[in-house]
Image 1: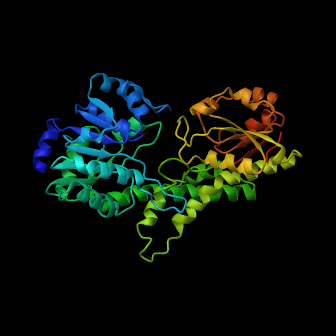
Image 2: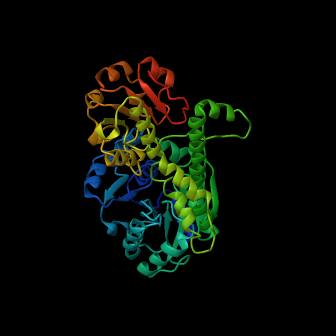
Image 3: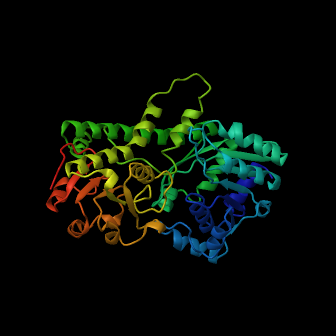
Length: 445
């Protein structure tokens, strides 16, 4: 089967698809292609998740509009079936890979999951199949990592016996289906014909632009766009700290800056988390680590954003000192443990850094998060006797928090706002001592 034959099978929806990795990216991808009319096999290493998915139950517990209903639909119609068995992929024409690609403690990419998926796929890879890596990877990874593994384990030759491409995902928790449908994609192929066939495939689920490119360009686009966001957030955080030092309000400053044309100052906050921004800049940096380039802005931005949970602790210590208390003798309530509002995703959560820092300083920490199963206890029960509450995530449940009730059960009414959930005036009117990211005047009740 040539690429043109594969193109025809895709257009007729006769091509059988596989998705390796049924997490935050792979599960909605598998569901959308199944909804579009393809037969889809999903590979998931955890048997308990396979059982849930085949029962039509989403293992993703955050607020994901439409995902649970779509999963129930495509499993009921048998368009999607999950398994742990790679042998089920032997008849698949297109294989999408959606596994985690983290960095280690030294910010070096660790592709254990990706390598394992490729090694398991190679021996069962169908002749003339198309393999597409959707995971975010360092520029050069397709050629230096993926291609050698697939060639060796399959015994096949690129562009003769199989085809290879890269289409980086662009989704975020809370908007998985919306992002998948409505955000443009870059289709990197190891040759132009492969990228063109990839476009025929993705037109079934993406209603935005599909831009054809080579693999190195696709890899660069994804890592660059998240490094850009990281740098912009770091800039906003530095401005926030300047505002604190000189007695200004960063939120008013940001509002007025963004009234000027071509300005888009990002949101400052208590830290950057998730599966993309904390690691993708390092994937970009890693691509040139042996080429003698001295990169400064991207590493500096990572350092600034990583430090923001510790800056929140500094704000807390200042407020406690004003109240005549010490952190080592205090009980602190942390609101939000996921990295993103209305999500259960705790990967690289700034709250984890905050909590560890508080405990290292001798504080007792109580955590509440309506989306993270282990922290779903009653909020007001958790707040009883606490000396301060720290807002780390802007969950919807916290938007209309009864501050009077909260203050009445706390030992010391201190509110540290890492996400601009409350205005200083709101906190003061409810008799809280207040500190917030980018709020220069230390507002007290």
